[in-house]
Amino acid sequence: MKNGDGTFFTGPSQNAVEDGAAPVPGAGEAIDRARREGRAALIAYLPCGFPSLAGSVDACRALIRGGVDVIELGLPYSDPVMDGPVIGEAVTQALAAGFRVDDLFEAVAELAPVGVPVEVMTYYNPVFRRGEDRFAADLASAGGAGLITPDLIPEEAAAWVGAADRFSLDKIFLVAPSSPPARLRLTAAACRGFTYATSTMGVTGLRASLSDLARPLVERTRAAGATNVCVGVGVSTPGQAAEVAGFADGVIVGSAFVKRLAAGQDVEGFAAELREAARR
View 1: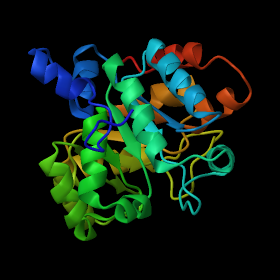
View 2: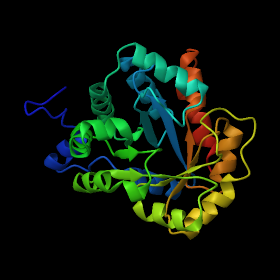
View 3: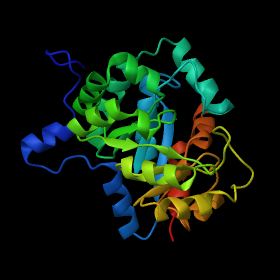
């Protein structure tokens, strides 16, 4: 998958430009398209390398066939701070099977030709260790849309922001129910693609009901200047997706997909259910 100069596969974003065709859109464009269709965007998370590298790519393709608008491809990491037990177990399995950071770019390159934005969700240490410019160059070369960085705050993100801007990548930071107005303004201004609003202060995972903190957080984030605000953490059922779609620009689902994938259940059909539920 590497080119002769050591960068990764030249994905369709670059090929499309060279061919005069439309490039792969970023997350913001995908959210805008969903809005025109009268629904919230459906954003699906899966960890790369689970149940295998090829299996994770196949699962993402199934999600896209089911109607997912944006793929969040998680980079397995040994010291997570946000992952709940379902995602944590999957990530541990991927690492035990020998997953390496280079595998991520190969997976992105496999998915990019489908035309759905692939946002990599990663803790910051792997980006810092590889070097921000090299990480951004490899991600852009593979056809990736950008990064979601749950443990990086905008005021400490200058190196990544600069690299992302140089390679026209999305920069997606998180806000939480505890975020004060000044942090919401700072984060909204730093984001490109969308602003990730966590519905709860806890870790990822399935919840019986949606936190009542999500709606006011979205409203406060929009008031702080954010254009697209998508809600994740604890969203796992069509009913919860419908509830989030009533006030947010995007619905982010992770653990529910990972749990079905681990059990060998249909993820494509479940994605279609969630997409339908996200209609307004």
